[in-house]
Image 1 (tube, rainbow, N blue to C red):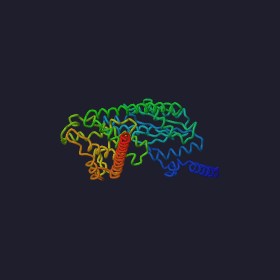
Image 2: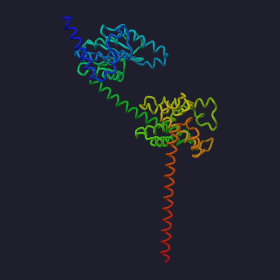
Image 3: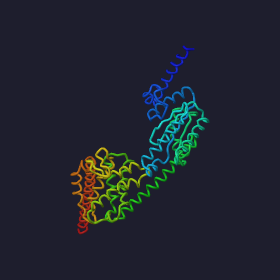
Image 4: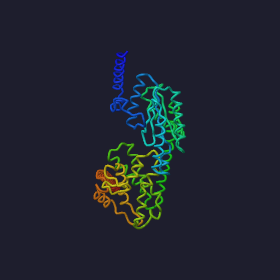
Length: 422
């Protein structure tokens, strides 16, 4: 017997090694650790340690054919707690949950804090009935131990599908728990996919409707001031021109075009007395005006257009770091935001305002060139001016062709007259 056990251990080790080699998704995780004994089970693991532990438990469960449960526990409403009570209170709540979860850990269970408000639990060698009862107990005890806290738990068993899919299934169950109203335990099953599919359809429909509403608001903003009634549409047209000139994919071109329509949506939150002032703004008024990118970002929050939201937020940033609201510089500024900056400034310099006449295209071009690398991205300006030149050339050629056609027609008419006179 003493000889057989080492042989079995060696064989098991070889089999595990072969399984790991065949499962590329686990290779990275397993490379960081050589045994589960490297992780302390006395308290909470961190994300990396949990990742490694889960990888080994998944391999072991598949090798030995034993059941495995994985669960993710999320503290609901942590952003609201942070907003109402501060970051410290939010951290205290999460810490209290973590301490309780660690103290409740059973013999073979593995627990970890894998994000600010999310914990991971691995329950190995336990069938679905026992694991289900165990997680229900954890949910009830945690909610009872910390007052006014709501917890969502998404869980999955390895029974019925490959153990390697348990992690993803548990994550999808957590999403379903959110969509069902949070503060509940959801096990993975067909109903989870149905819930997520229905929720995705609802979210998509809602976001499309909300985005359409915001676009209408942008039109209302233009109508609010007769001097800028075409501003957003002109900016949008210039944005599309540059995006195409830069070789962006068509889908990206369309989103940049929409960003042009929405870039000043935050001005809805700026007082008319500031927005329509016929003279130069004072310092206080200028500070109010500079808030419009952040207001616009908040308006666009939750519409499923985070890229556009980020571009709107950054469209007054400058490559030299002297822009607002965050003083980003060069590579920190999204390309689409750089496009917006050029389009917005060019349109402003070529349109009349109540307090001045438009400086005109020639002046606008010279200003774009003058401030390349400081206020404007040089590559974007180069493409924009090239595209404008191409448009002007095409227009000149069209005019020339029309004049030539008109001249030919006059000559034909004159010849006809001479023929008739003869």
